[in-house]
Image 1 (cartoon, rainbow, N blue to C red):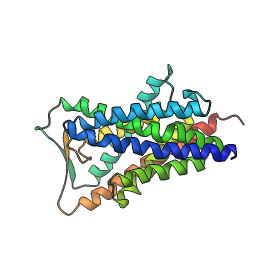
Image 2: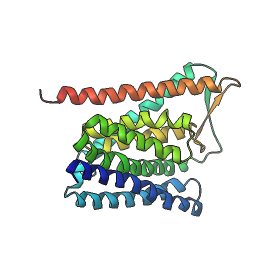
Image 3: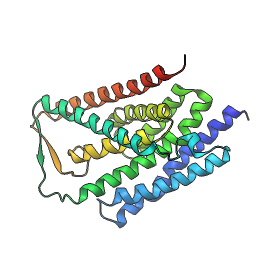
Image 4: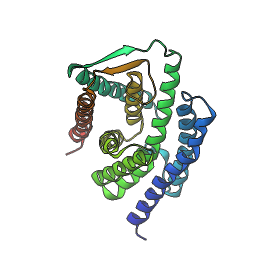
Length: 261
């Protein structure tokens, strides 16, 4: 077996093992409140996925930093940088929905403010699991043998399939996850780490929840006039795809300009 084949097989094994970890942990959500479920499952799945990363890294004779999973003095500022980008993407999406008309947000006074930090921690834990599972070991190893774009495409397909298998309808799975996967993947490859994509990922999901655009209730509710829900959804997806395309292109151009000639 050639080096390229062996590396690809190990990356595939990693991609198969990660959803298995999540499947075995998913029932834990029934043991706690709906608000605490994401934090519990995300934390345990992240820890197990990190352990799996350690196993595969040692199998390949590498270090955690070789797959972007090590922490450094730049981790915190990069995480904050990614968080700002994720919040900006949701702000753009909501502005487009608002100025498209027939949509507004109202404060849900019945929603306890104490759940905000719990939700943030939960979305961060789930995002960490996904970044370790997709933008860590498998992306970096596939990049090493196939190059940037083939690696990004393979991970994007795997990311989309996991969301579809998790219950997303195909119309949503083919719009949201692929664009996000390309952005997170490009950010991971261009910064050679997981802090920036983790910040973007966690902030985007948390901000969407905060503004009432997730299945579970957040502090605000999005109200759309009768007969205009399809239009608001179209505007939202258009803004999301535009924002992720701009951000992905910016990471790619940033690296290209810095690359040695």
